[in-house]
Length: 160
Image (cartoon, rainbow, N blue to C red):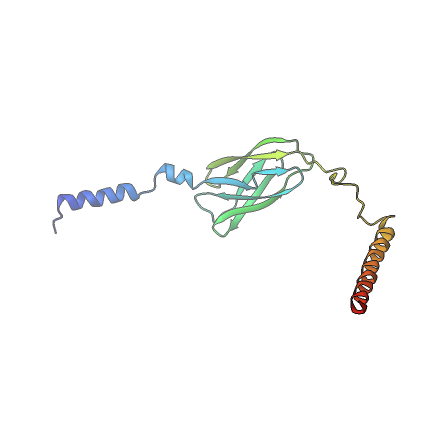
């Protein structure tokens, strides 16, 4: 059976454009951290992909050393904790696949700052403490005085 020239060219074009290219294969190899900005001492998730996600790979970075990412739902994943004494800065995260392909991304570590006291939002007059019984008693007395005045006003209205 003889094919026409346009049909043969169309088939050739499909084969050329449908074949995986080195650029598309390289795009399938990646590593990312979630979140990409983290405080020292917190946990992050690492998600990676190699051309074959059926075998574990290795992800390395200065804040945690080296960790093995394992297959999970079509990706390679792991959870790592950033060391508490890690200095603030940008760190390179490197994926090494079993077939020797690599990928990199950046992790931003910020300083861990703990507040020393609460926000300055007022005098704290309604906060429980030494004044609490006085405030509760004063509020109850004001409510009682309101009821007494309401009763007196209603009685005067009936009499008058």
